[in-house]
Length: 279
Ligand SMILES: [Zn+2]
Image 1 (cartoon, rainbow, N blue to C red):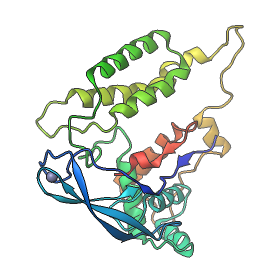
Image 2 (image 1 turned 90 degrees about the vertical axis):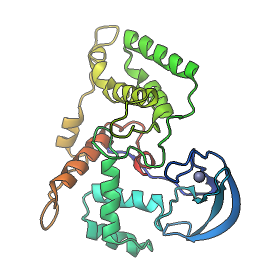
Image 3 (image 1 turned 180 degrees about the vertical axis):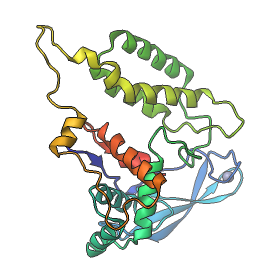
């Protein structure tokens, strides 16, 4: 199967208010819209969007709230996603710049580089300073009953080990996906542990249940004819090409991109949602 990457969308009318004031150390959680501001955007469809200047209600900090797919950066998440996609397809950073510019999306190769690296850094399992910047709160809005229910479901799934339960695990994982990593010297809180637990089970599920797939009820082999390695050999998979000129310039970058491609390979069925890997 081909790699399947889902690009982030730009929705000019969908505003995502932060769960907590982004100002360092501010516990404010409510925001008052004060003023509409125009924002020029590098995007295929929306050359301009509206942002809101909002006030952190209790403490008066002024913040900007952007529509879905837009950040404080000038380039939309969709264009950044396209850049990452083109790079993974084998283009060099400079070639991605040329293609996108020729389509009217002005992005420099340094920005392409940054987009690729920052997505690669967000692949789960890589050590990094910040898990998802912006979410530092322990409160991720999951009630205790829900958490207990999720753990009970996991127990049941571990007993039945049905391969098709992977999507259930993903659904549960997404509830905790925004749990922030505790700072150095702090204990991991419950939300963060839940996040790791479910991310791990979700990612490993095909392997944990693989033996169940070999034969159906009638004893007939139902093993998929080819696995990821076969697919790569066959050539449907994205090839990690030796990059033109000097290959990967930094080992960290090679490592990150390599992992990103493998991670995308774990999401062939539903597609990898690039937006989840973008801060
Ligand atoms: Zn504030």
